Length: 125
Image 1 (cartoon, rainbow, N blue to C red):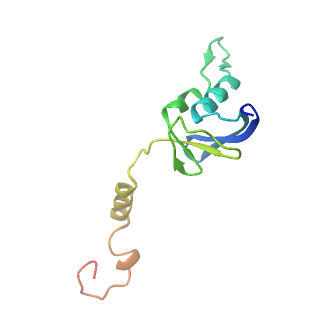
Image 2 (cartoon, rainbow, N blue to C red; image 1 turned 30 degrees about the vertical axis):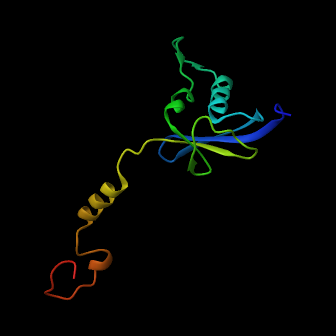
Image 3 (cartoon, rainbow, N blue to C red; image 1 turned 90 degrees about the horizontal axis):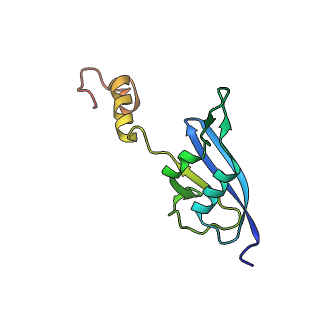
């Protein structure tokens, strides 16, 4: 019964705000790595106009971090029926740094807790 097909979804984002989903039937007992290998095998490189071939878009995904339903898993994790395998890109900017920069751009006195301060008081009070 180890060869009964199960249904999984492989999701990845190559660019911001662009998510791609590939639904696949894989043998029971498959790992995350074998699911990705099967996806790459079924999506061959595309031929370009000048006769050269473009690499399959999935080949770069092997360098991303895998997860199932929002939780990181190792590549050797065995998938279950109905799993959503997600491949996470590395963060370009640390969220804390981005928030600090956004706050600095907006200014201290116009947003959040600092919007309604008493006249003559120090900033932030």
